[in-house]
Image (cartoon, rainbow, N blue to C red; front, side):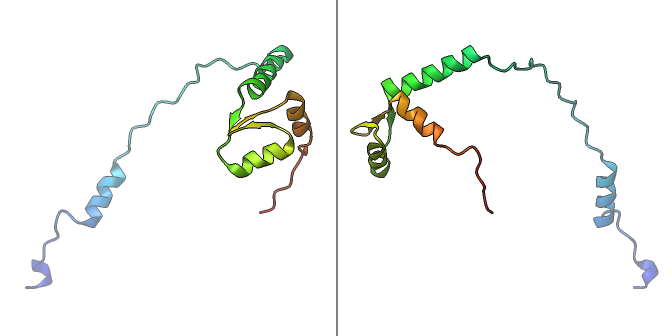
Length: 107
């Protein structure tokens, strides 16, 4: 069989690549934000959320199932009954005030 007898196939890698190059996927329409911009909360709204969250911590409490965490809260002065921890509002405020304003994270 001579090289002139060899006939190129219609298929093959090059033809598949050419077909893929010709196909352009349709573009999706751009998204449009129809939601209104949110306004920041005023001082009264912030105070209401703060009061409600403090009431939950004081009256309902938080369940901790880790004995080490329960012991830590007991040492910190929280009211621990079983696995339920209830916090005093002033105690939470003092813990929040002890958090540093900035921290440095080292990679």
